[in-house]
Length: 428
Image 1 (spheres, one colour):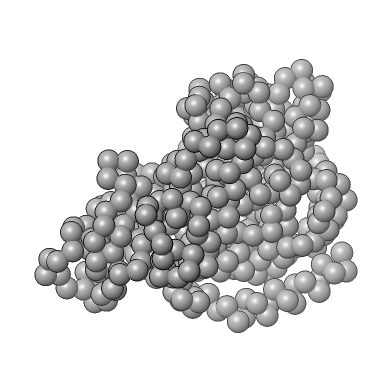
Image 2 (image 1 turned 120 degrees about the vertical axis):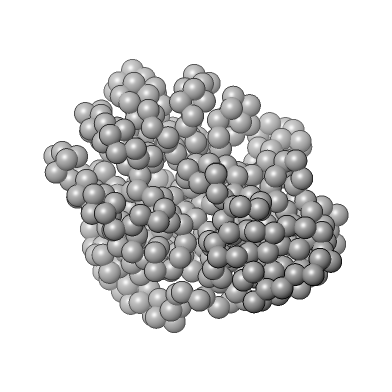
């Protein structure tokens, strides 16, 4: 064995046995190979004492624009349409592959240090993002943005880079997704091209869906149907799809999402900050929709700490439904683990702590003032935990972060490059 955790509390996220106390967990290569009650005579290259610690699956951030770390705090406190079209898009015109790499490395450092092992990203220069993900060792589903005028998908950069990346990255660490930014930034003729390409190449899809009331209602005014109905009609949901936000979906939309097995990536903090509204997560879950969690870009959040999203997601549903039992702790934690792995097409190998699954796991410090009194670790993880409690982040069996240190990111260089990048956008 490469790593052995001894005498540790394990939150498995397996509904049959969600918590195992006083366990030994062994990792070899990229896999979890052993889980048993502590006490057996086992050997490993590295043995970690688990007293005062909790082991749990790594978190999945199912909607992000990672390189937007370069725009953290940029033109904030504005409505989405004003912020996006009048400030952000003009600034993004200055992006280069080098800047996107810096922003993505900064995002991955933040994610790893707060427990995220995988993210679903839509942005620009995604070939650069793919290379950065491989260099660091995380998992990612990535897609290039489709928003420009005069679009022909088969002549677009995304089409070309998708094929180029498909030839070079075959280990499954990076998955390529097709991408439609939203119903308000492209016409249905584009959607059909992208949907056809996704089906032909067995790709998943990533879209924004009914994020704001304006977006949703304008779609109805223009087309006579909601964004969800339009996307379904034009074949967008004919492949596994992650639809970000879903704030203004109707009951009929929810039925479509359930029927088409669409995952909704819920972004509660971004939606609150932009005053976009509150997604009806309880209704979606009751209808059978897979709901995962995302942070969105940090310019509209301003954090990649998924533990913040966990707590906020649960509390908002309790408030909205006037029901303290709504979205309980295990279900909320599942949104960030099991449901996220399902959204990325990885649920056969990740999202749980289980023998045979990839070692995408977190070592959490429960020996601190926030966590020492613990009656149920699942409740503490959902309501008391922040990214500060992450002691170690392991992805595919490799330690990528431990106690403030990154094993695959030159953090000093990344911070230096990010500070230099800020000067570029101060002139935007």
